[in-house]
Image (cartoon, rainbow, N blue to C red):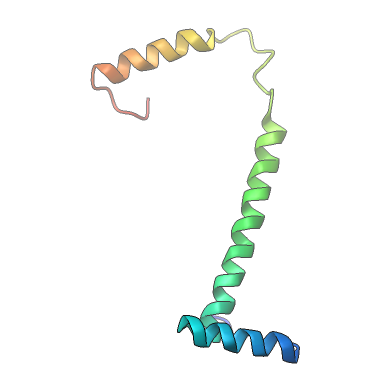
Amino acid sequence: MAIVHIDLTDRENDCLMTIARETGKSQDELLRDAINIMISQFQQSDRRALLQSARGMWKDRTDLPPAEELRREWDRLLRYGYPTFI
């Protein structure tokens, strides 16, 4: 675990102490929670951008059967107990 020094305003520090007291969490726990929320939000937006960049990448493929046909085949395989990763 890394030790990080941050500078808080008096107001930020007072609010953090109040929240810590009300929640029963330490200030360190609250800061880690806030950082994890920010990381999660960043990763979600990054994932969204990746998905949007992949949009339409299969639209011009002519070597694949129609999606409905693939779905019927997957449903048939699942119905007969094949692994769900197929």
